[in-house]
Length: 502
Image (cartoon, rainbow, N blue to C red; front, side, top):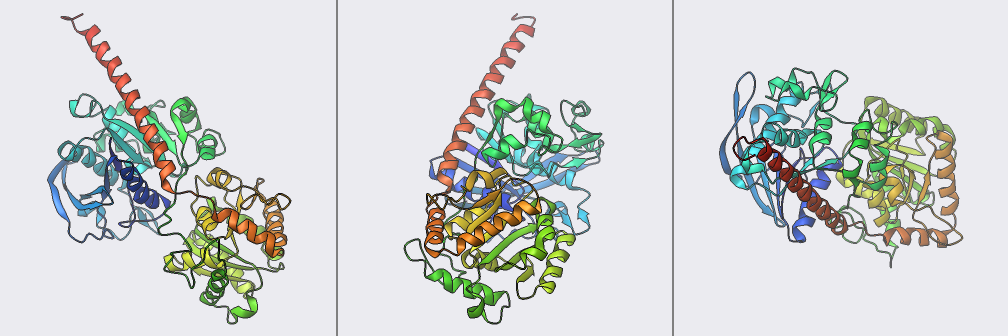
């Protein structure tokens, strides 16, 4: 089967979050199963291509004000996957992918409308896939365009669409006059299609028009159909419930494994955990603890995160005075909302012997935290999948999480009596619940033999991409059958309308 991915970011070419990791890894896993896979991406300023080759010299994209002309280049094939890049410097040759600290780029609607239409036009030349697999609002117009602007185009008659929601909190909301600007019909501005409280909602368009909708964990696929997690689109998803499913993200163990990690001080494995203590001392030193030997007996809790309200850091603010009195050290790496950057910097100054913070994105330090910490904290308000808790399991770094989304799906509560479980989790979104759960983990840490059992339980879990890729293969087949059925209905309808034939 030929699957074409369309997404706004992908490692190693561009990245702001977990979407890039998924789009970098899942196509390779699908190719390993024998599928033909293409990936379409914007060519940003940060996209580094060693030997780009132009494969489509000019793609004409009409807008209401004027035509725009872009090209498509390829970076060749990697692990059986062909990568294509939509090249239009006025839109994509910018400092960042989506905006500046002051806010999103004001022309994001036009930028990603051009990207979506260029993918469809380029595929006519480079090969129309059996399935377009689109990701988040930036490629959400592909399903919309296929069923509106391209509805009569025979090239796409059999092309199915699968749309993956990576985070319902980001929807692509724009003014109503966006529709004519990007040459989409006004009739899409209705409550049953793309209208959302007076605005145009790109994500909603994909939820209405895609053949199948997936998200990145089983629990999150149910949560987003509720008022609490649906961000106003829960009704749309409930109407599509038969075609909505959750498939847990995998992780790339070639990059995230203590047995091969190039960033950590010592390698270790479930059979020989001795290197973890060296990693712990190296981590403490990296965060400025001047005598890591003296502090290495205290359990270290790590955080690696985007600083955002979604991540539950308001709960940490509620309990920090009491948490700092516990025998533990907290190391934090991340950046994002100024409110949380300032909060973490403030508490690190307040408790310099207990809390250390680096406000940055630093891949090497992230690896050091995964390897050197004893526990990993993710108290998220909501978490579609989460990857760091899965990395932590592989490193024997015990997760402490809130039971939401992928965190709930991947972490089994520790039971010291049976020796089963892989971490600690709490349900109530309160500081008290978080503090109580951290204290449970700190108590468990005091029993070294039991703690090593807990570590090895997590290290034995396998969240590699193979199983997830097979599940996506099943969804692609369902989407193709659904599209074939829809085409049959349309063809039958056309016959009935024909004055000669019917």
